[in-house]
Image (tube, rainbow over all chains, first blue to last red; front, side, top):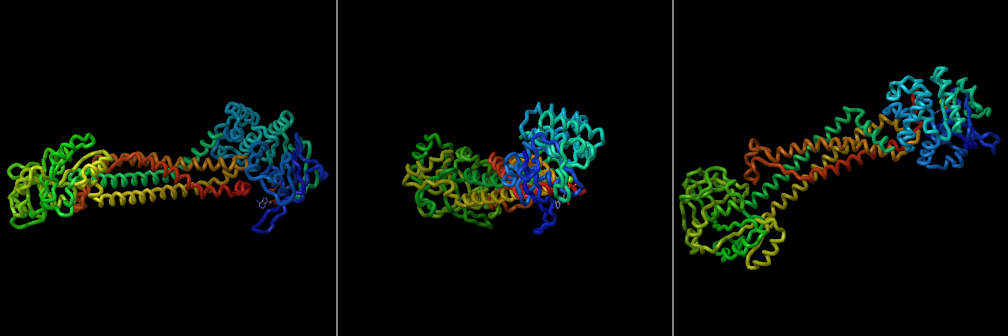
Length: 230
Length: 403
Ligand SMILES: Nc1ncnc2c1ncn2[C@@H]1O[C@H](COP(=O)(O)OP(=O)(O)OP(=O)(O)O)[C@@H](O)[C@H]1O
Ligand SMILES: [Mg+2]
């Protein structure tokens, strides 16, 4: 589903390369590594600052990279226009951002339904689906609230709900359990697993959470921008 | 999906209420002021045109060839009653005024002035241009050798109602004759030359005084709504001079052109206000919300839809301003149209320039439609610079939170 070949990414300070954030990343059979496949349920892990978020952003057609190739179901991301990448993000990818990234003017219900609405799902289906995921994540009493009135953990669950509601092909979840207690965190992981099994949605987590580590099928370890184990 | 964009635009446009209200009020006030000024300009021109037509030329005037160059008794239209019959039979002609005129000297014991004696038929003039409405003082009557004086002429001669005036002029035999007249009324037509020199007396009295035939006249003025009449009359009366209002008063054509320029300038200024106002507010608002746009971009909202949202926001601002501005403007224009703006306090001399003390506005639908279009245009244009910010932003950078 997703193949990564020799990807390098730098962060720049002006003209100068400030940081080599991703170093020769390969996730592709041809390069002797397993690619990210349909039904994938895996974890990117590693110490803070090792490049987990950066790699998710690059895989998710959100950030650019400096060399190498990434194939998203045979489309080479580096060759796509900004509009084409936006369409892929909308229709095929569900992001859970480490910083939640909720739309501040929209309430919880509208935030969760945002992507479905952009994709043109009928109103009734959006309402049903929003209720369903909100109930699982125990935010169904907050549907009318604005994000700014929620706690960190609640916002995090809204961010997860938004990413999963439209049932994308792949969910890229950056620290989705970071602010959750173990009960909520378990409910979230159960939901993720069931989406993975019943809808065959691929899921890649980035996390240092033990609960996540224990539940995934595969662990990709990063250190200082390099894959050290996969 | 478009419902969502509409909601986002609407919520955001009114999210920061005080900022939003400020632009809306700015637009509304400048727009209503522009409408009032436009209405006044147009009302002024219109009233001047109307008064000139009523007091003198109508839409078309007929003279004998040569009369306008040399205003002598011999240069008169000869067979007036026949022409009158023909003209009266034309359905497109609403009213006629047939006048006799003679230049001469008017004098009191102490003052004298050049003046033009105009022989008129009061009933005819009333129908032609509600002559009695020009009365400033006294009565509209010619009884007992009565004369009506133009307001400025009355000032020059320092006469009041009841004063005596001697008018002398050359008759058809070349003799200088004089007659004593009594001032019955003072007329103010706002037609500069008439107010400065006209004396109105009964047509028959003037005819006798000048010794000219009953069938002669200096001017046949016509009121009509027809646009084609002038050409057909030109063809019909080749031996006479058929003149349209604008060719008789070219200065008014110039004034009309000036007004168009004035109006365009005010219009342009107001649009600039709308443009700058909305641009300022939208620029700040977009910078404020750049993270929000980054978020929406990153979860798949296309640039096109964001642009649509921004356009809609600007339109909400522009149109809210427009609606309030249109209501205020309409109220102001209605007031100006019905009550008028009384300038007498600080514009005593205005009348002598052909303007009335009280100027009345005009209301045209086109004021509102053209501002609507211009505000829509200015609103849309004003967000182009802030939109560049969104187009060129780096979504990762702008969504990053400082921790
Ligand atoms: N926009 C940026 N400009 C410069 N350097 C950056 C930028 N974003 C990330 N980095 C650097 O790139 C490296 C990888 O960052 P990244 O956010 O991917 O780490 P992470 O593994 O997600 O860490 P964490 O577990 O704390 O979320 C870090 O050293 C970080 O400082
Ligand atoms: Mg991270």
